[in-house]
Length: 344
Image (cartoon, rainbow, N blue to C red; front, top):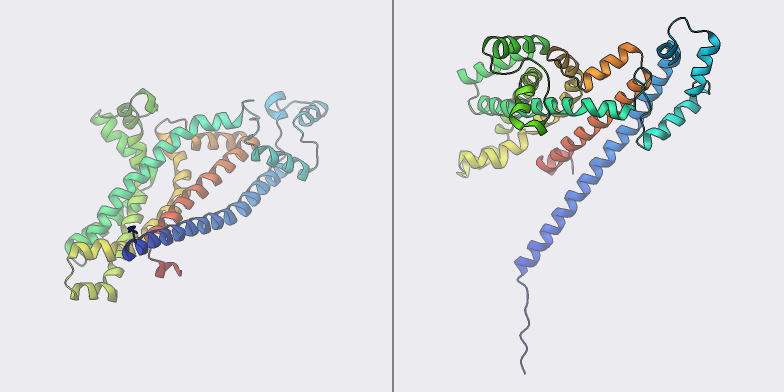
């Protein structure tokens, strides 16, 4: 009796082994990136919150000012502060707050008497909608301009794009916002001049309310991405491996996507990680101009009111957002940039 035995093809074995090895490398890169981000996040978080607590002690701010006014007696102030636990030692207060934060409790607002997590959540959706759309516009337009400038380097097209992004980068977001409102809302009447409508009410209405503030915030991103991408691509075109690909007769399209873009995109992607914290800060200006009750406006109002717990909650959420976004950027960089450039 003859039994047929299936012997897998060596190429198939090597193929599966190659895929497994690549998956393992990818998993290792993600874990290393995550570990580095956590190593940065922990000290930044502790230092930032400690400084906030320390400044509150120096300022003498108290919830009694919101509840009792300026004419409150020392006894009444002490009673209110005791209810909030402010009569305890500094490190005890900090540890109590930190423990609550790690359980998802950001505390209660002094000025509004409401849960800070709820207050931040109401405005965070507005701000993230505007910020993510601004990033999308900045990435798409910036990548298009940077790519065209690199492919047409030293020509009038390259000079025109370079001049355009230079002018765009010098325009403040509040000036751009005012001009956009004047043109598209007042003159043409195409878009609302302010306010916000959730996506649940209709995607078209939602986009109509966030497109102008997103455009106002996207100009800097367009300029930075275009400049960094052009520089990276032009530098990649001068490398020996690209010259070798040209000599071997590879098509310009294949050279660009297989060699130039992958090796030149790094600086542009890294720029996004640097722009995101600035974008969060600039959201205050955009929200004031367009009448949006977002995260940035809540942070500004809380700081002006001296609402320390709300400011601390804003700080925590801001650090988490920045670290999370940079983690995403670093993971993408790890997958896109060749291992030789990562030093692996």
